[in-house]
Amino acid sequence: MKVWLKFSPKMVNQAVITHLIKKFDVNFNILRADINSKGGKMLIEISGNDTKKGMEYIKKAGIEVNLVKRVLKKDDKLCIDCGACISLCPVKAIEIDKDWTVNVKDKECVGCNLCTFSCPTKAIKIVGY
Ligand code: SF4
Ligand code: SF4
Image (cartoon, rainbow, N blue to C red; front, top):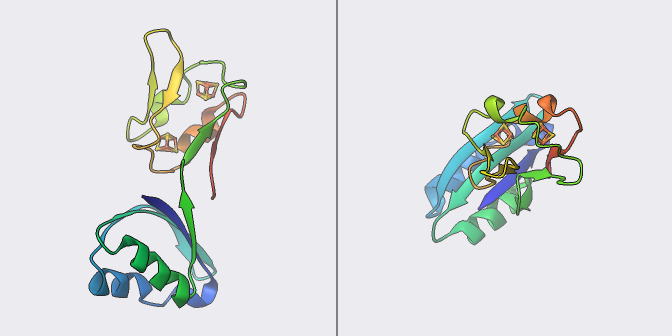
């Protein structure tokens, strides 16, 4: 599952993530991290037997946890299938179908936000950031 973690300034220097990995049976992958001394956000992909317990642990430690069903949302009414977003995606999460419609493979998306800047109609946005 993918999760946005929000760090307050006082949590930035805490070793909560290190403890999470040591204490629980979880696989942890950082997809995106925008964190400085003032706090910030991190998008992670987490799996393993203790995923639920691990999330409870970091919540109790003071990090805001937001599960995401979708990382990126595309409004099909606004999208004009221009394809401007496709080449910017570093993980090839956006593709064009045989019928020339543009689709996002949310499973692949790492929430980098690069594609949203290219969209002339503001049809795509990161969810939960
Ligand atoms: S947010 Fe980044 S990874 Fe996701 S579709 Fe856009 S460019 Fe690709
Ligand atoms: S840039 Fe925007 S309008 Fe163009 S294909 Fe991508 S989401 Fe659709």
